[in-house]
Image (cartoon, rainbow, N blue to C red; front, top):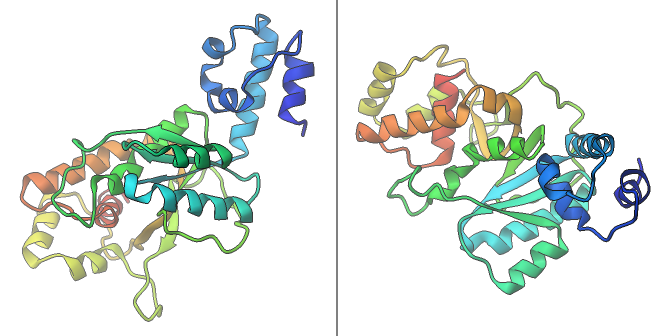
Length: 272
């Protein structure tokens, strides 16, 4: 693989120009508007192909936080990068402003800030689960627009202890994660068993009566702390919209979903 600087200096451009490589890498989907100095359509197409290759071989690692967790997210990503150099592009998704010191840390660690506000979309009254906890349902669609085939969400208190193997990534899955286990780790838990532990009989009856449910005892529940998305399939199957439909249907009937993990369980149950 060529260094991207060499690609720009000697292959793409007629003359070497001082340009912001990182900015162009992050905006590959909008090359025509951001690269007016490239007049040759063949060279523009070559650049686009290179950036597509670049992004298709990197995973967009992201987390969704408010201002209280920006520093945790930065440290989380530093550790992921130390253990997996060159494997990820990093994104913090928030609606909050950040300090000058945090801005410097983002720049030095090549972490990009994505501004998103879904406060009016995911509304609940539970302080332990702020709206930002639910925003990762939307982000794969955003990252797909930026050219990423796969993305990985992590809670910002996640610690990566070793290099991660992504050789299993393919077009054969929509969402992947670790199975939810019993407390003694003796076996995996299915989605209906999990709901039975946290829902009242009345709410369980509501779920059975108002959602199309199949194989409720045969779907292994997934932990939400670390999730890997096939962005294209997530988008094609409208899973952000479906998650929002589930959230609103429960809320409108007096059964507001408290946490993002419960929403994912419901999504698995209704879209197996």
